[in-house]
Image (tube, rainbow, N blue to C red; front, side):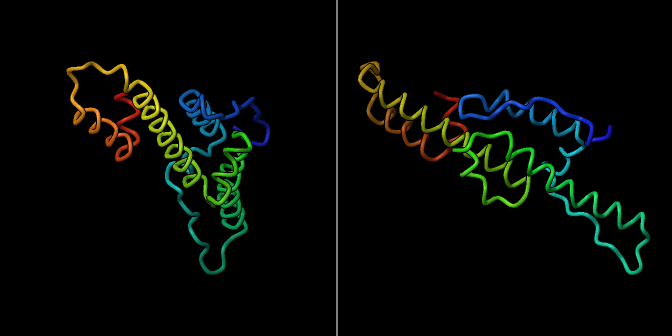
Length: 148
């Protein structure tokens, strides 16, 4: 498929829709033959001595794919999210930063929920167990978000 002729409406990532957005972006990037770059952050094989025109063209196309993938991610996020990822220089680093930021945010929301419901905890639940659950929120963002 010629990526120059492919267009699709991409979903704008806001902090509430990461799961759906991630699936749609992965599919979109696969359709553009860019997903492998996001997954592996591979660099194009350097040109040897006396490359052919075909080798130079292929090298330049592979190099351009890295910027196309990064551009797709930049254009699919809101401005407040963009400011968090704009220092990332590769599509893989950007994708990883988005996943990490989302998991931390989910963890913080879970901790706030747990803390706000602290008053309604069962009397049988000891302070030690409650403290342990709050501590887990801080130490393992991805896991605690799912527990809560």
